[in-house]
Amino acid sequence: MVKDELNIRVGARIRKIRENMGYTREQFSALCDISDSFLSDIERGNKSLTTKTLTKICTSTYASADFIVLGKTDFSESAGDDKIPEELDKISFYLQSMSDSQTAHMMAILREYYLAINEKQAD
Image 1 (cartoon, rainbow, N blue to C red):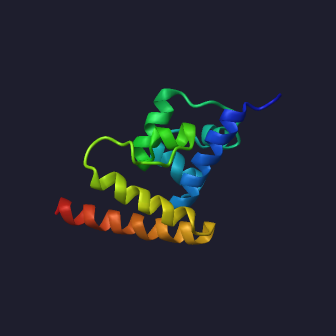
Image 2: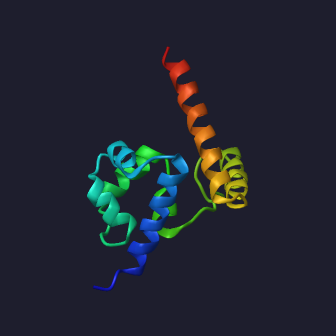
């Protein structure tokens, strides 16, 4: 069976998101409310995403559908506050210039910071 090239690229991007967040497949599939085996099939390019699954992944990880499906990382066309896309472009540049281990470390720091500030706001 020949794998669809789009499925392979989408799966690789999802795996990169998961790894950058520091999650195992089991943790990531629980976060996104999908099965471990389905996530494994997606990451290997064996299965296609439904819009429902894509929405779950985007909502759970704050990744854009544009990035997951198209690999688009240019935030300059985003709607809303002009300052936000400018800052996201900077962050994207920094992350792209890092090694995989540096990116994983930075994502772990950002994740912990995000969880900490959300916890404070909930109190």
